[in-house]
Image (cartoon, rainbow, N blue to C red; front, top):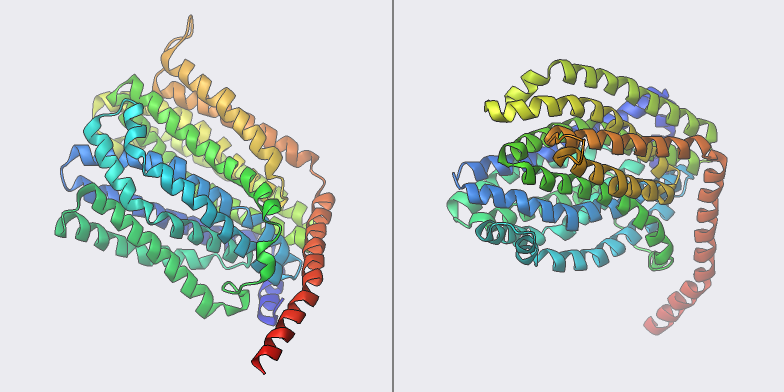
Length: 486
C-alpha cells in the first residue's frame, strides 16, 4: 500500500472501535438520506404538474427500475465491500483495483439485459392489468431513465471502492451537489421544455451522470493514492469467480426489493385507501432504514479490513459492537415510533380513512424496524466475511416462502383467519424478517472468523500467482514493443 494509504488506515485503526464505526456510518447515513431526497424532489415537481396519471406513472416506473435495474446494480457492486475491503486490509490496494475493474466489467455486461428488459415496461405493466395511459407514461419515464442506468452501476462500484479505503464522505458531498442540480433538471425538462414523464426520466439520467462524473473526479484529484483509475490486464481474468460471489450479493438485495414491490401490489388489491396507507408506511420504513444501511456498509468495510489483515480478534469485536449497538438503538426507535405513531401518521395524511389503516400498520412497522435494522447490520458482517452465498439462500427462502405468502393470507384472510389488510401485510413482514435475522444470527454464531481470514489470504495468494505467471509474458511484450520502436 502507498504511504498515504498506510497512514490513513493505520491512523484509523488506532482509534476506538466505536469511533471507527461512527466515522464510517454517519457519512453513509447522511449520504443515503440526501440520495433519497432526489426521489422526494422528483415527486414534488411531478405533483406540481397536477397530473395524477403522471404521478402514478412515476410510481409504477420506479417499481420496474427498482426490480429490474437498481437492485441488480447495487447488489452486484456490493461484492466490492467484501473483496476490496479485504485487499486493502491486507495492504494490497493493487488487488483492490483489480477487483474494482472486474466489477466495472461485470456491471457493464449486466447493464445490457437490464436496459433491454426495461424498454418493455409498457407491455409488462399491461400484462399486470395496469391502466393503459398510466402504463404508457411509466414506459416514457423508464425510457428516459434507462440512459442513466450504467452510470448508476459505476457510481455504486466507486462508492464501495472508496468505503473500503475508509473514504465514506465522498458520496455525501457528491449527493449534496447533485441533489441541488436535480431540482434544476426537473424544472427544465418538466416546465421549460414540457417533456412530460420522459423529461422526468431524462432529469434522473442527468443526475446519475452527474453523480458518476463528480465521484470519479473526486477520487482522481483528491485521492490518487487509491489508484481508482488504473487498469491492469489481470482484471480480465477470474471473472467467473468474481461473478460467483457477486450473484449472491445481488440476490440479497434483489429478493428484498422484490418483496416490497409485491407487497405494494397486495395493498393495491385491498383498495386505494389501503395503498395510500401502505405507501406512507413504506416511506417511513425507507427513511428509518437509512441508519441501518449506513451501519451495514461500515460493518462490511471494518470486518473486511480486519479479516484481510488477519486480525480475527478485531473482526470479532466489530461484529459484536455493531450488532449489539444496533439492537439497542432500534429498540429505542421502535418504542418512540409506537408511542408517537398517531403524530407520525398525521404528517402523511389527514384523511380519516387513510389514518384508520395507517396507525395500526405503524404498530407493526415499529416492530419491523428492529428486525430490519438487525438483518441489515448482520448482512454487513456477512459481506465482510464473504458469506453472501448462505445468507442469500436463507433470505430468498424467507421472502418467497414466508413473507409474501403470509402477507397475502394476513391481508385477505383465509378460513378462520380474518382479513387484516395493510397491517396484516406488515405483520407478515415482521415474521419474515425475524426468521431472516434468526438465520443470519445462526450463520454468524457458527462462523469461523479464522477460516474466513484464511480464505481471504488464499484469494490474495491466488491473484498474486496469476500476476507472477503473467509477468514474464508482459516483460516479453514490453521488450518486443521497445524493439519495434527502435
